[in-house]
Length: 229
Ligand SMILES: *Cc1c(COP(=O)(O)O)cnc(C)c1O
Image (cartoon, rainbow, N blue to C red; front, top):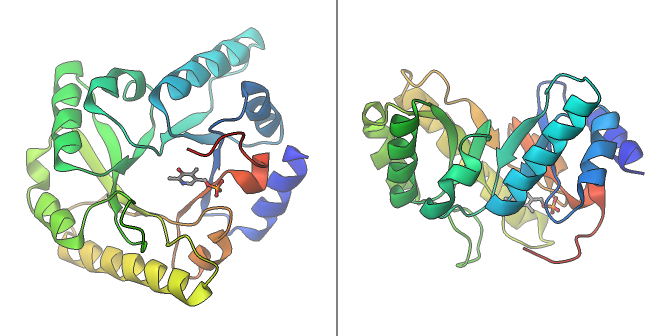
């Protein structure tokens, strides 16, 4: 089941687009099944669940004498008192959504001798409740990017409005794609600022029209979650 879903989605994704399988709220067995189908990038949104699953999958792979070839994406709200559950293991923190968090990640990176790869989350959807920076806040941060020695700015993440209206979704994706192009022009020195993480189960095919380089897909791979985050 999981295998078929992954194969189906992969067959429609251009090879250069990264599929992050969002395994939040699903058991490690589901991750193992996805791994067996060739999936290597996983996304989680709660620090505790994230670090538990990283440890369990690591142990599972070691037990099979496999190399540790999975990558972990953190995609949820991250409180600064939980950094140590996430930053040692995350290949990419996709959901940096405040100046305070960014500063805390910089401090943690400096103290631990690590460079943390991040995406800045841009607020694009209609929902007030959605987190993320405004365009001018992202600009303000990137003008000061060289101050963040322990952070590598790798691009933008965004979530479209939660709606069935495709025009609204397209407008959200167009806005983030245009802004990303503008930033790429404005900051040519940010060589790693390449990723555009847009598209979830309901809208990833649309996101491809707007240059998504990463899609984050949960339900369409693993089925319904028992709880909603
Ligand atoms: C849960 C989640 C997803 C995956 O959502 P689905 O609709 O299940 O594909 C993607 N991105 C973020 C930030 C999420 O929290």
